[in-house]
Image 1 (cartoon, rainbow, N blue to C red):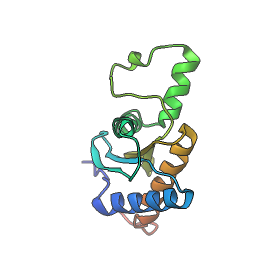
Image 2 (image 1 turned 90 degrees about the horizontal axis):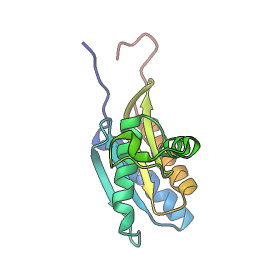
Image 3 (image 1 turned 135 degrees about the horizontal axis):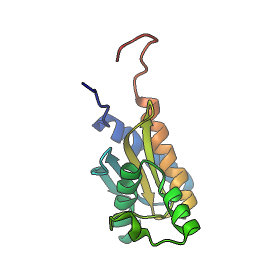
Image 4 (image 1 turned 135 degrees about the vertical axis):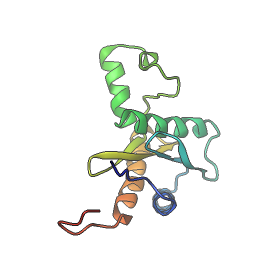
Length: 147
């Protein structure tokens, strides 16, 4: 029997708080999406002034990063390099804009964080702040601990 790690509400809140702080520091606004390992939303936050169009984009970035277990930027680069249509991946929710980042714990993807509303590079940088907050908040097991 396998035990699966999941993102809990404390993980999600730590992520949202870290990203909100980073965006405030940068004096920017965006939409933040946090998803479980299947890409289903755990949280979506549209900060004041963030574009409405970024709601669907952030949600789809989180979905893509979790389902494909890689950053959305990587998918976009792969599609452009090969000159293929993203529809090749068979899911209309897959996007190749930067800003969706999977959350990995012990090599397994347990969820994803996405940001939309800035440039692709900034979206990914800010999403990475959220991922780091999740990982920093996770309890560390002692060597030889079975947890």
